[in-house]
Image (cartoon, rainbow, N blue to C red; front, side, top):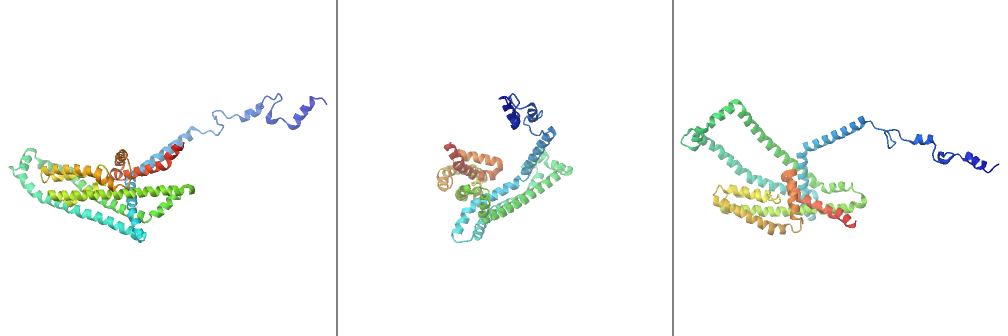
Length: 386
């Protein structure tokens, strides 16, 4: 057997590896043709028709739109739930303080929530009588105004002679517009009252459940975290809740001082409704930055009923008190609570107020504190290591 026939017989015995041709140049044409992807499918996978792609995109867009509309419809309810959770977290330090004194958590929650409801009832008891008194005075003044309409020598009578207000009002009522508008106004007022009562009941109920089950809620939330990181995440969560509770307690202290100062000033200068204005100022002062300013404007306007000098003096009093609050009261009350840069505070309050109104402005600073703690714990250390 020749030397040339031995390699050929060996090739015939073992076959062409990888479909290599006789010249060893590469795969055969048949193998190459079988491995080539079909036209229009660069990846070699299964082609999708434009109908399928369009249907998938349309379905995704529809689901996204439906989700957004659902969130918008329940946004008011979500806001109430957020407020309830925030109140529960804010009152948690008081509950912990009661439990450390030997009370069971259920009794501690009941004591704290009862105190909170008593404060709310006290506010309503101070505000409702003045408002009812003013409404009664308005109703009693209506007959006198009607007499002045027919008296051509009075100011109201001269206005009636010039503009014929009574005739225009009769025309509106006869046409149905006035009656429907009046009915709509009455129904609208009833809806506001009903909505307020319902929202208050929802907030109180959810707050009660959150306060009672807060430890269980925290444990349930930690189950979504990996075991290796659970202890670290629990520590950060406890720190955030502790900061929020301390902030709210400090905020309540400064608001109480503002309310007492307003009551003392109004009682000393003869401004009416001193107690109601004091409670109103305390509640408004809970809103950072803008709350005390708005309260000062309202009290100054009420002081106009006494005299212009008293109103000016009231405005000056609030300016001085605001400076004292920012530089003397707040630093001491918030010493162990939060440490947030003033620029971050302003931006947080503006963004929170734009998103959720008064509730957003109230929870803005605690939310900024929580974001700062998360950044310090997770984001900034990784950046520094890199």
